[in-house]
Length: 100
View 1 (cartoon, helix red, strand yellow):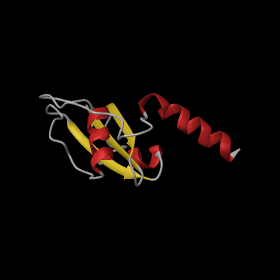
View 2 (tube, rainbow, N blue to C red):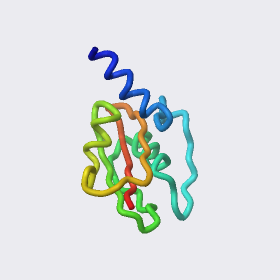
View 3 (spheres, rainbow, N blue to C red):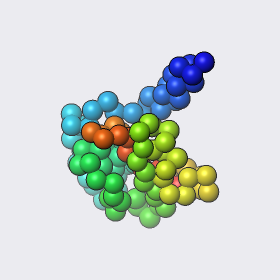
């Protein structure tokens, strides 16, 4: 049962998950996606706001699983998310959530 729940949780985030941060190179523009910001944090290993949310409210988080990284983001459960980016780094998972 536990492995089934883990499988379902990971399947939910599979579309947004990048398996390796090192293999991806992103170019920042005036505004970037939450996924690009999550990849930047995973690549550098630094949890930080990248400053390109385009005026949106943004929360960032870190955790040992994709779910915990998202739940550790500021405003999670208080605002409606509009975009979620998540990427695995060397020490764990990084998440960037932009809210309405």
